[in-house]
Amino acid sequence: MAKYLTLEHLGQSAIITINNPPANLWTIDSLHELTATMTTLQADKAVRSVVITGAGEAFFCAGADLKLFATGSKQEVQTLLDAFSAAFAAVRDYSGVTVAAINGYALGGGLECALMCDYMVVERGAKLGLPEAKVGLLPACGGSKRLTEKVGASWAKRIILGGEILDAQKAYAIGLVEEIVDPGFAKIIAVSLAGKVANQAPLAVARARQLIEQSATLSLQEHVQLEQQALLSLIGGEEQLEGVAAFLGKRAPSWADED
Image (cartoon, rainbow, N blue to C red; front, side, top):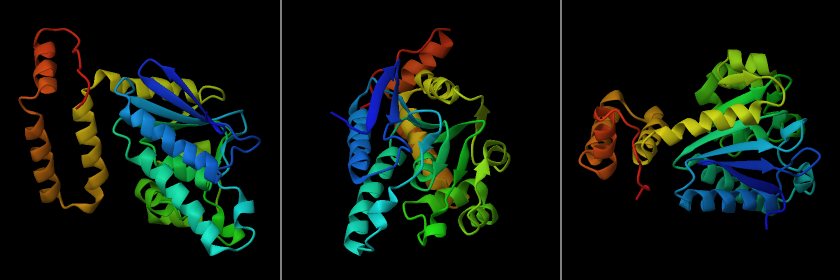
């Protein structure tokens, strides 16, 4: 039984709540729980989307427990980094849609986790940042890359090098988050957004998601080639035939489980 995360289901969405009060800090154990939970959800064909949020009103997640860095042991930190890498990869590589519902402070490894999601909903009053350099550390689990991809190098430098903490409005203005909501509504809106994937074809969603993730490293010609290969792989399949038939028949499609 999970100790640091709670899991609930709502329709075809799963909701993971980080529950390690008071600041919902990441520990090796909680990261292992996240990896195990995402692995289970990946195998559950009844689940099409995942929302990640934090327990309480003040914190989404304030990052790693700094006590784990107090001894300066490289071996201990490497063990922690391995746990972070596995957990965040499980979030990033999930084949459905992932949404971070940021209900308070999202700092360090907390924001890095949110950055692994497909999009972010943030409540007014929340604060976001990667302030690791203030304690002699730096983002080491994909944060500097994912942040730069979302907001560009200049803003990434302000946030990481300058230790700038953003409020919800500024985060929205620079494209870090996709929506601002009133306090108490992040989870509700995130579930609503995540639930929209249920209307889409599962295999098409998974293939399109892969293409989007790969796009930054490919030329337009290379990307178009992969797009066309992916499209052709869908043609004639049960999912594609059902989707077109449903549209032409003016009815909702009935998606079979993804292979």
